[in-house]
Length: 314
Image (cartoon, rainbow, N blue to C red; front, top):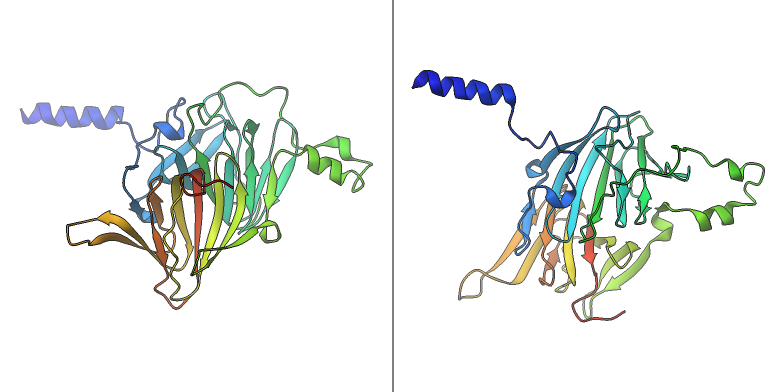
């Protein structure tokens, strides 16, 4: 019996078992192991799901996934300086949904290989990739690249499987001899866009007690932005008609859930989220933010599909 057990163990080790480091060709964010979507979830960075995306043709990218459940996928991916991801037959980079790349560190060049356009994003800036567009990424700096990625999950699917039309292009020669005179025309025809501090839509949200919120991108599929909390500041109760994936970019935040009763006495749940932690809030669940520290806290968020409360209209 001992020999049979030993042989069984050796068989498993030799053949291997499915792991997060071997994604299948047909895998999409919606097919990965999911976190619960009917209750709030706190995911420290060390507890994220680790996935090695790509193959020898596309290049390989290290993903650290916070959430891949109904409505939203968000994760951090990283590449060493000089590394590139492209697409292959097994690993497509055609987004069928509006994609968000928020740079945490390093220098990120995003190219649309179908049109030849390229954009450059630095830490704190966002690369917005509209639905039905291709993307290749370059870690074009001396520091490791870390990017926070958000994708809304829809019934249509997230990643396209059709082949790209035409050859791969990394430049647009049609603007040569007309630059910068043709810059307005180039911007109108561009697919990818960079959003920096000067492009943010700033809002003071709250009826009696306001907090500073910056919207960096908002479509009918996803709203992405950041909340700035001063030391000791507390937000009013917030609620969205969509799944909310939060990431603590800087500082610390307590996330409270005033409607998530633990017992008949009225005790409620709360999370103590540190820097690099993620917190997922289900669609329609009220929550409140509090900065317990003596430093300013920055919380990045992506809400899909609708940022406004249920029933609210713009």
